[in-house]
Each structure stands twice: as structure tokens, then as C-alpha cells.
Amino acid sequence: MRVVDLLDQVRDRWAERVAHRLARGEKVRESFQDQLVRYFDLMRQAITSGDPGWLNEILDEWLEARTQTDQEDQETSLSPILGHILLSLSSVTRELLNSDDALELISAVLPVHNHALQYSSTKEAETYVRHIANDLEEARATLERLDKSKSDFISVAAHELRTPLTLIEGYSSMLQDIYPEDEDARQRVEIMLKGVDNGITRLREIIDDMIDVSLIDNNMLKLNYQPVWLNQLIGIVEQEIRVITEGRSIQLCIEEFPGYKEMIFADSERLYQAIWNILTNAVKYTPDEGKITVSGRTLPGFVEMTVTDTGIGIDPDDQARIFEKFGHLGDISLHSSSKTKFKGGGPGLGLPITKGIIEAHGGTIWVESDGYSEESCPGSTFHVLLPQRKESPDDQVNTIFSPIDDDLDYDEIKETIAKETSWQKK
Ligand code: ADP
Image 1 (cartoon, helix red, strand yellow):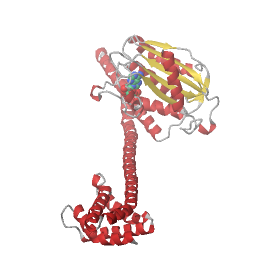
Image 2 (tube, helix red, strand yellow):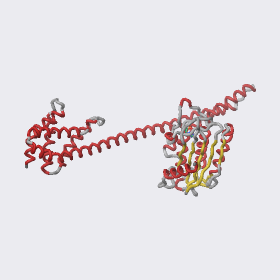
Image 3 (cartoon, protein in one colour):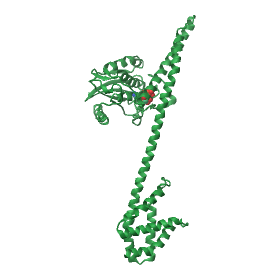
Image 4 (spheres, helix red, strand yellow):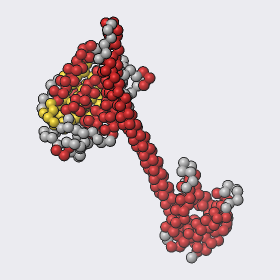
């Protein structure tokens, strides 16, 4: 065949030329020169058989060798080498062949060359995607390990702190029985013991929160389903925080909403804890003379409770983060641990626990806010969506995280609610 003869004529000079170009003038390894000759022979085979796939094997070897070097290096791509191969072939053919023969040879080589380019770039893209996927998987595994050690730490710390706290509680209550004779001294001791008592209560609350978070993290939160009326739970929390809201001139407005007085099956203590967290947060992040409104409605199969405040609001970028453990925002050095003081942040476990409780019931929680501003106070609305269970889910009595319907698309429900809410605002 004519093309085969033409190829044979240019083969040796071509191999030298490519090697020289690739080595940028330096001496090239003999093994590499052999590789180039092998490439040329396979190219010849591909042209004569009409099957460019003959080149795949050597391309795979080159790609493999290149990916074992630094992935970040752009030079890992085979295209520059294939470019040199073609350029060298065209210059050598011009030197050694007349123009008709050169044209014939190049026309025969081009489809094979195109195949080589396409094949190697597809393979490179696949390798790159695999490489990125591996990196992502590694990063995900590292994050998971970090999160696991964080929750292990919380669990160990909570249990370790509980024992000395019980000791302090015991000694403090024994001290209460010892009354100094002197009235003045007695009063001072009483004030001090009250202080110790407050400290113990706060510490116990923090430890309980830490234990709750680790229970939720480890899917061990147990729900005790029983008949619950939302209005009763809201009423209890309202009574407890009324004195605080009045002290800070915050208007607390509890609206009667559909589903508010209806019985549902839920864990009343846990639900109370969730409502308490949301309402005390609303108090904490609303300046004096603000307003907090509790409202809601029913949706097919669900009751929705909303808590809207006229507080400092939450930046949209932070709205998912606040439901993560230790997801409190702002400067930790300015942290003032208070349950009710304006901006008095806690350890940042309240909302993750609340979310864990609501989700354990098969519900969901999210927040809407136009943004964060202590000046304009755009406010926030927390939405809690709870299944309207009319009977105790027998198989869920001692288990958790068993949403009543796995197929529920909460995002769709949230979207519908968001649309309707923005319509109502207008
Ligand atoms: P914390 O113990 O810090 O209050 P939470 O888990 O209860 O922790 O809340 C996490 C963070 O979410 C808070 O630090 C606060 O930045 C933000 N947040 C919660 N509720 C509100 C609200 N009603 N308005 C504005 N920010 C809020």
C-alpha cells in the first residue's frame, strides 16, 4: 500500500524530531524513543486496518504514567505531546516527500490523530472527575470524622461533668441546713447559696443540652408518644416567659390558629422543650419593646406553628448554620450567657436540639428572615411543621427518626408556604 511505504520513509526521522522537540533540545531517554517508534507503528497499523482503536493501549499507558505524576500540573495532558507528534510529522513529510505524497500521508494520518486526541481528552476528563470525586470523598470522610469526634467529646464531657456537679449539688444542699447564729451572716450565706444554686441549675441545663445533642447525633433520642394539645404547651411556655417579656416590654401575642386546640400524638416534654427554645430565642434576639407572635395553621396531615419576632433577624447565609451544633452567630468573646437578656447567647445547642426533636416526630423546622440588622430589626419567623398524628405510632414508641411518610417532599411544602407567606405580606 502506498501510504504504508510513505510512512516507512518518514518513520525514523519523525521519531528523532518528536523526541528532540519534547526534550526541548536535551538528550532523550532511549526508552522514550522506543515508545515513540511504537506509537508510530501502531498508528501505521491503525491506518492500514482502518481501526484507530489500535492506538488506545499506548495512549492508556501514557495517560496512566502522566496521572501518576502531579495531578495539579497542567502538563499532565497528552494533547501537547500529540500536537508535537503531528507537527513533527508535517515538517518531516515536507522535507522528505513531494507535495502530493505529503498530502496523501497527512490526509491518512489526520483521522487517526483526531481519534487519539478525542480518546485521550475523554480519558483525561474521566480521570480528572474521578480524582475530584476522590478528593471530595476524602474531605467528606474527614468532616464526618471531625463531627464524630465533636459529638464524642460532647458526650464524654457531659457525662464527666455530671458526676462532680452532683457532688456540688449535694454539698450545697447540706450547707443550706447550716444556719449561722448571726442574722447578718445568715443573710449573706443565703445570698451566696442562692448564687451557687443558680450556677448549678445553669450548669445542669447545659449538661442536659449536651446529653440531648449526643442522643440526637447518635439516633438515640426516645420519644414517649402521648396525646398533646399545642395550645396547652404554648400556654405553659407563655406563662413562664410572660414575666420576662413584660420586664422587657415585649408584646407577646399568642393567636388561636387552626389545629391549635386539636389533640395530636407527640412527646409532650420534648415538644415543650422545642417550643421553649424557639420562644426564648425570640425573646433573646428581640430588643425591648418588640413583638413576638405565635400563630399557625393546618395543612393536609400537618399542623404548622410559626413564631415571628421583630428582632435582629438572621442573614440568609446563616439560616442553615443556626441549626447545626454550636451554630451560634456573632462574636464569641462578646458572649453573655443569659436565657433572656437581649442577645444573651447560649452554647448554641438549643436549635440543633429543637430540630432533632421536631425531626424525630417526623416534622421539620426552618427559619425565614430578610436578613440581619440590629438597626432596622427585620425580624425572623420560625416555622415548625408537625404531623397531625391521631394515634400513637406503635412501632415508633421506642424509636426515633421515623418520619410518618418517607416520600414527603419537605422542600416542596416549604416552598408553597414561603410563596403563600410572601403573598400574605403584600
Ligand atoms: P444559642 O444558645 O446561641 O441561643 P441556639 O441554637 O438557640 O443557640 O441558636 C443559634 C443561633 O441562632 C443564635 O446564636 C442566634 O444567632 C440565632 N438565632 C436563633 N433564634 C433567633 C431569632 N429568633 N432571631 C435572631 N437570631 C436567632
